[in-house]
Each structure stands twice: as structure tokens, then as C-alpha cells.
Image (tube, rainbow, N blue to C red; front, side, top):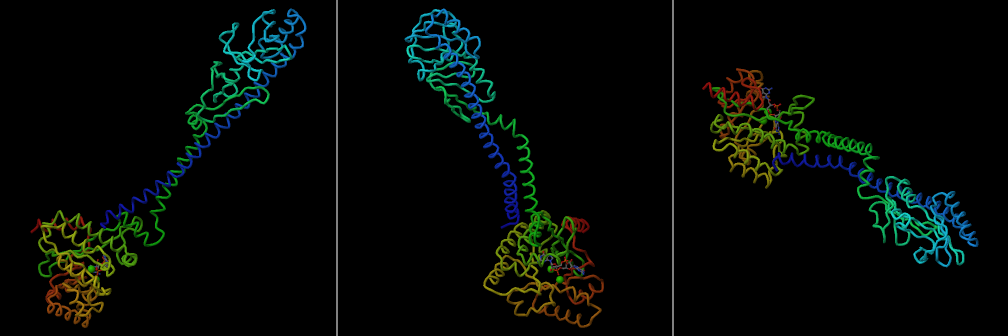
Length: 515
Ligand code: C2E
Ligand code: CA
Ligand code: CA
């Protein structure tokens, strides 16, 4: 898996997780606010309907009182009774007219006195209550008529529909209220309709009076919940937005924060903090650049540049060394491939690999991809494997090195002389080059035994036909000695220190121009 997709794969879950944690309070909060809005609309509708019933009961109670008083005067003639009827209209609140009937015929009214008109008692719900859109006196105003019966006689008390519609409006200005009597119902405008009103979409409630045969219907139209939220819950919405933002940022930060050193390495890898430094390999006689070793550096945001000795062992233990090296290869290929012509045929590029690397899949593919980036210029990719940590031969490693060799990838033993690799080992892994450790180079002219070992190594390489590279060359004396012993390729501060990619390319260009 190339590191770029590895990086993307790690970044995507982090973003998705942080975003979910930001959205979670929002989502939960929205559900709660919505649910709360609905339930408080329901409660408001119930309260309004109860209050309307209480007020209508009071009105109808008044009407019943007026009817009872009127009924006490059925034995008198209408001329006397009319005075009583009119008095009731004048003193009893809400009552507009009081009429008397005998044998279902109206015979005396508060408005006209003597009267004669038939009455259809069947139109009264439970024989007691009737709603009308209007009558001949007030054809445009609804009325509610209460009928109270006593034997052959009955009294009719009429309440003006405007009291009713005002009550429906004023009890609760936000909710919709309707008054239903039998098959008729009245809306807040005082209009009377036949049949049953359509159920209200939000908080629908029906309250039937226990004293009179009518029902009050309450509820809210569609969209009332949003008005409610806008009016009452805006601070809560703002709080949720803030909570969501804080929790999302906190999760993103916590995810990125490293709890252990290996997580810290992983974070650094995602952040692109590992970069390659290149140190040239030079020809011992003419100083030509014949290659370079790629050395990893950690550009830490707080600590500055961190050397590999401090983090490579941890990277090897955690297995992160594999994607880290892959990232290094990508960076080197991206920067150097466009300058392939400056490198020349057979330019060595050495990458350090660890034994762990050889048992994990991917090394072969990484090397193949790397080489392919430099075509048509043939580049000599060398894997440097330290002698202190040799690979244990197995079917997997044997096959890997066979495959690498057939790709043209070279194998060098690094820090040679500090470990104990045998001739058999060099043979088995078809080693191509040895890098003499800088501790031997440092002893040139100082310690006779070390110089002797160095001479033996050089001699051994000649016999085995191995390329030899001396690292850590710091003085002219060391260079001259190594050159005199036939060591052709040198690396060290005497020539160049490891440098960033851009500086390396610049130096390459300068050298090309100067030639
Ligand atoms: P190494 O492979 O032996 O690399 C050579 C080390 O010697 C480098 O140290 C280099 O900067 C240093 N050096 C070069 N010329 C001179 C000189 O003239 N004098 C002295 N005193 N030192 C010189 P560096 O870069 O600190 O690397 C240390 C070790 O870290 C490397 O030793 C290598 O074993 C490991 N390393 C570096 N990069 C990687 C990597 O990408 N992967 C792995 N697995 N190991 C790496
Ligand atoms: Ca090395
Ligand atoms: Ca070394």
C-alpha cells in the first residue's frame, strides 16, 4: 500500500470521526428540541382547550340561569313575561335574547314580545344545545342557543357567536381552537360549518364539556413547531452549535495527539514530518559524485530536526519503519526523477533498510516502483542492511532477495566490521557491496590494528569482487589512505554533509554546469 493512500486512509477516519462527534450533539440536540417543541405545543393546545371549555361553561351557565328565571314566568301572559325576558338579557352577561316556547312553538321573545314560530326540538343536541350560522335578526352572526325544558314549556337563551369566536381567539392566540356542537362547528372567525373539522396536524386535542353537549377542538397548523423553535430555542440551538464545534475540534485534536511514542511517530508520518537528506558518495580519485545515501530526518514541529538514531529503533519496533521508508522513497523519486539526466547511468542511491523490513510485504513492490520512476536512466538502487542486525535466511527472504536481484537492486552490508557476518552469509544473500564502518575509517593513522582490519576488508572485497564504500571520511589523510588501498567510493564530511533534496539537486546542477 503506497504511503499516500495509507495517509489518506488514516486521515479519512479521523475526519469522519471528528465530524460525527461534531454532528452528534447537533443531531441529538435537534431531536430533543424538535420533540420538546412538539410536546410543548401539545401542552399549550391542551391548556387552551381546557380554558375555552371553562369559559364556555361559564357562558352557558349564565344562559341556563337566564332560562331558569324565564321558565318561572310561563304562567303569566307574554306581556308580563317579556319584561322578565328583557331584564335577563340586560343583566345576564353574554345572553343576547331569551325566548319562551310552548308545545315546541315560540310564543314570547325578549325582542318582539308576542310571537309565533315553530321550533324543531330535534335540531338541539341532546335536546339542549344548538349552533346556528345566523337567524332572521342577525343573519351574519352565529348564535348558540341553550334550551331548557320544563313540561310543555321551554326557555331558549341565545349567546352571541361573537363572544364565542372572541373567546376562541383570545384564550390562546397561537393555537387554533374550534367549537363543535353536534354536526356544526365554529372557527375562530366565528364562521359556522357543517360536519367535522379536519384534525389539526400538531398537538390535536378534543375536550368535551361535562356540563353541556359541546366539544372544543385545539391544535396547531403545520409549521408551528418551527416558529416555536425560532422563538424559544434559538439560544439552545446556538449552544448546540458551539458544543458540536468544540467536540469536533477536540476529537480531531485528541486523535492527532499521541499517547505513546509509536502514536507520535504515526502522527508525524501523517503530518509529513519525515524527510530525506542525501549525502553524496564520491569517487576517491576525481571527487565525482557517483551516488548518494538517503538518510532520514524528522523535522519535528517543536523539537526541530531529530536524528535517526533517536527514532529509527522505535520505528522498527512498531513496524512503522516500512511506511516511513516508503514515504522516503516517494519523496526522493518525486524530487529526483525529473532530474534523471543529471544523475548519469548507474548512479547509486542507497536506502537503509532494517531486517524487519525484509519480512514484511511490500519491499519488492516499493523498489520496483522506485526504479520505474527513473526510466529510461538506469539508476542503481542499493539497499543498505546493517551488519549488526542481519537477516535470518528463510524461504521468504531468499525469494525476496532473488526477486530484488532480478530487478537489478543491489544489496550492501552497512557498518561492515562491527558485526559478525560470515563469508557464507555474504554469499547466500549475493551481497554486492560492503560499507566500511566509520569507526575503522576514524582509526586510520591512529590505531594500527584497525588499519590492519581495514586492509583485510579491502583485500577480501577484491577477492569476492564486491564493491567497497568507506563511510565517515573526514580528513584528507583518510581519503589518501583509502584511495591508495583501492577503495573507490567514499562518503563523509570531508566531501559533503547530508543535505536536503533541494540542496542536493542544486549542487548536482552546479556540478553539471561546471563540467
Ligand atoms: P549509517 O547508515 O551508518 O549512516 C551513516 C551515518 O554517518 C549518518 O548518520 C551520517 O550522517 C553519518 N556520517 C556521514 N559522514 C560522516 C562523517 O564524515 N563523520 C561522521 N561522524 N558521521 C558521518 P545519521 O544520518 O545520523 O544516521 C544514523 C543512522 O541511522 C544510519 O547509520 C542508519 O543506520 C540509520 N538510518 C538513517 N536513515 C535511515 C533510514 O531511512 N532507515 C533506516 N532503517 N535507518 C536509517
Ligand atoms: Ca547506511
Ligand atoms: Ca555506518
